[in-house]
Length: 580
Image 1 (cartoon, helix red, strand yellow):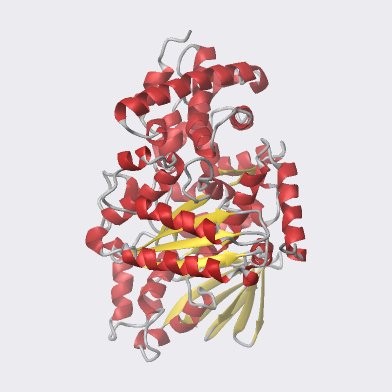
Image 2 (cartoon, one colour):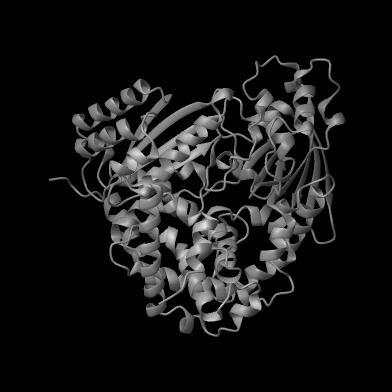
């Protein structure tokens, strides 16, 4: 009999704590799946909702409790550009890494070889390119698993001519001692690695996480402290006592500043940067890369505006700065170009001795920080979507929801990192989805394309209307949580089935009460208290109809529930049906 370790006791206590705070209530196995996925993917700094979206546990899961796909270390969501057939894949994706992460979670004190055997047997079918979606549905695999597997397969197919670098990673999580795992388990893990190689899916990695490793991963707070070595610096202090510095930093030292000890790019330092990396194909990035590669190029900082760093505290000894709570809020394109071009360059590469201009601003005042972010990112052209987090309306929403006990994560993972209950954290994406489904009657858009309503200005203003009552935001959040509570109590529904149904059910109930598709926030606010609208009976009736519609269409088309939930044709037909 396996001995339960002290770490096992603590992890069990964490499970109990999360069960107690879960709203709506979750099965114990699902809570452990979430903990296991969070620990296994701790290096990716995913949001609570991104972790939840990867759960696949249930009937037909093929030994996979959670699955995630990453391209160049970026999580692939349903609205990722590579899954959009209208998107033209360019050279910026050349040699892109495409990784599939598979997680098996067992709240058991031992690791078992049979768990790995089940996974290996499944992957022989799931990753067989000759097997179509229809074939795998017939084999009995769940829609949740198939959705993730086909994300992986579709990304590889789209990138084929640009020579992607695939990998498949398996993490087996339990509450025992990983170091004491039987040799039979290790043998099956080696068979997994061999299988991935035989199927030509590139690199295969395996990991065993026991209670100790799980607790270590959960206990780690993202480190935003950094050491910045400078060649020259100039200091200034304002009347409020806030200090700022203008520094020249060699590109060699700047690369050390933006990388971890293992040389990996510290993407989390750029959470406060409103821009996204635009790829090497963007004109500015091509120019930066060309200047770095040219041994006869003038000093780098003569040609580049540099970067802006915000920190809570800056202290120096000589020309070395210790910075706490670092965020690089302007200069992502510059930083990424420097990293991509030079991080593995020979030590005698001339460009490494060139310099970049770094502005360091010490401040803990949120309004000041937001002004710096907006000002530094408007000095050059930038998409409107990139400035959403610092919009006055977004800050107003955060304050209003906070007054009602909802932590609105307009800055990614801020509330998770400071330890707020996960069930009370709401992301910008989740609020966008709730508004699309409940207030605008677009549940298919909520399920498949929420990102489009953050990217395109006119779409954003449709969802986040500054003239609409601020009361709409807690109203739609409360409405979706009521629907989720009812779905949690529904018998025989997997997590993926609930995800496919939740937005459609919410929109269906609002349409039924109003008699037409809502087109403005005021219409749904006029319904009164959400508790009176989203009752058990209403959710049950809508869900019954939806399940019948799903089943009929899946049989007729040979497709999946996931794809129907994202189909405007299916959803509009369902919402427009004649109710009994």
